[in-house]
Every structure is written in structure tokens, then in C-alpha cells.
Image (tube, rainbow, N blue to C red; front, side, top):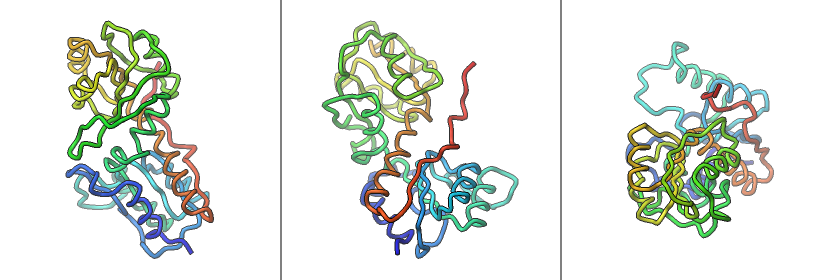
Length: 258
């Protein structure tokens, strides 16, 4: 019999808690450790739709990237999204494991999955973050011009759209940071990156990147981090072949383009 704790212990080995940023909330956030697990659903976020999907599939566990409980929770009611998600998970007896910044930093985690999705080679750590493991940098299969590269990122990540600034030079070496990683811009530049792909970007970051000759591509938070859902499913499925694993088919980017 495979339990929630068995899968949690495995995931703790894949993405150790010591890799998480000090402000983060990771691990088993809801559920019973001794519960038997025959099915796991993996997603970027634990939404009401994902919980319902797990219930319909007969999954006892959801493994997600973003914490289902992040800011202080003083009550669990149907008045807000967090309360509705937790109430639904408890009602269907579904445990929730969330691996956030520890999965960002883990070998084979979010940023390695992002680098892989862009077909980067010679991938190495960007030596950023609290533990020096956040972000990756590698080389493109071939040199590209900034606009061509932006379109390449859009296609590789199946993003609805991307925003970018032109750093003014051809791109071969690329840094990546899934989600809101604009703070790592100087690290990307120091590692020789010609371009930096992130998930959230403000106007001032675009201005600064252009001023230092760095093409900055904002491909969206969901597209840059969602590849990790498949990684979770692959990792758990390989370690526990008797457990059915799947990636959510209903969870999608909430940001749309017109």
C-alpha cells in the first residue's frame, strides 16, 4: 500500500525543504499522512476545478507547485477561493502536497523543466537565490535575433502571447527563471546571458534590461512554470508504478489574450 506519507517522503527527496525560500510554505498542507493513495493528480495550482477533477478521477492526492495555503488563513469558509478549495479537498478526502520554491531550485525541477522546454544545452545553475540554486542558464540550439527568439519562446511554451524588449544583439546564451524572477536579472547578465526568460515582468524591468543590453522575455507565470506538473507526474509515476498519475487537463492559464 502506498500512502500520502510515502509520496511526500519521495517528493521531499526530489525537492528538499532546505531549498525553499525562508518565506515559503511547502509540504503536506492538507490531508492525512496515513491515507492510501492509488491515484495522483498533478497541477500548477490547486483550484476548485482541479479538486473536482481529482475527485472524478478517484485520486486521493493532488501534487501542485503553488501553495494552496500561502498567506495567513484565519477561517475556512465558502466566502473565498482558498476556503472553497480546502473545504472541497476535505469533503472529498483529497490530500494536498505543494512543492514551491524548493521545486524551483531542485535538480530536474521548475527551472530545469523550463530550460528543457526551450531545448537549452549545457544548462547550469545561475547561482542565485538564498541557496544559490535558483535560475538556470544554457545555450540555444542556434543563434536567434530577439524577435525571432520571443516567437520561439511563445511556441515552445505554448503561451498565449509574450512581451519582450530587444537587447540589441543576437541571442545564443539564455537564462531562465520560472515565475516572478526579475530580481535575478543581474545574475543572468553576470552568467553571460544574451536573453532572460521569466514569468512576470514590470515596465521598469523591461527598461532596465534594455539599458544593459539584455533581451527580456515575459512569457507569463503559468507557461513558464506549468511544465513542472508533468515532471511531478513523471517522478511520482516512476517511483510508484502502482499509483495512477496524471496531469490536470482542466487547469489553464487564467490570463488570456485578445
